[in-house]
Length: 181
Image (cartoon, rainbow, N blue to C red; front, top):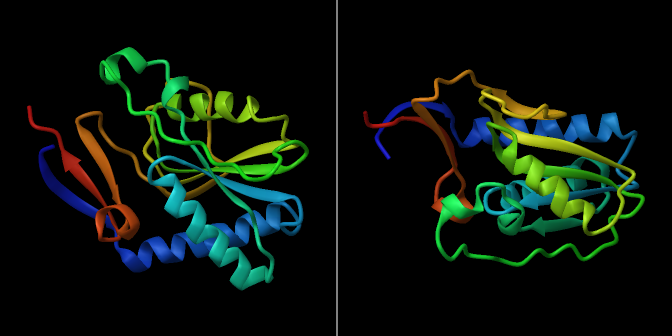
């Protein structure tokens, strides 16, 4: 993938960002009575679970968490691989009438979010959909913006933002990697 250029967030930086975002979600929605979190596979899922724990610590309320697999909704499916790996979407609550907070690790072109919106709408008609990302790195190709952002990070297209989470990568940090020429 190239060499590590800079560390943007460490474990405590990620924790602080999620705590702040939990407060922002509660504030924007005047509580969490009708709110559910849906993590986009892969790293959006542990982020959504951590966010739900923070919200419970702050508000004392359980927020349902679902998992969204968007593989078959992607517009670049043919470029991913011959046999894309399809995982399960697990949303064990009705999305109709709820405020759904979509959770992802990095917002880049917006194509993942567009696919997630399609997948979510197939499950029902939410009252509203909000977007939370740990890192917004710019370079949008679609008119999509996040409602809740852990860190805005202007990057060049020659860089890759790598979010590493304990649940997937055995460490918590966000780094910028330089792509090899």
